[in-house]
Image (cartoon, rainbow, N blue to C red; front, side, top):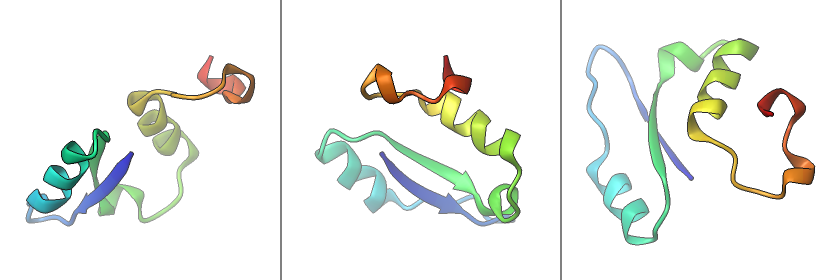
Length: 65
């Protein structure tokens, strides 16, 4: 997973990050820095749920089940 950022008011993404991730078969996402500049557990969990879990089921967080 490759994570880039956007910084309002401009909502431009980095095209090189996107192409490099795609070339390596990786998922990518761009997050709004304003939304994530202060920790809010529910906001972070929402993003993680949206991205999905790709790993050993034994280590999947209970809140993702």
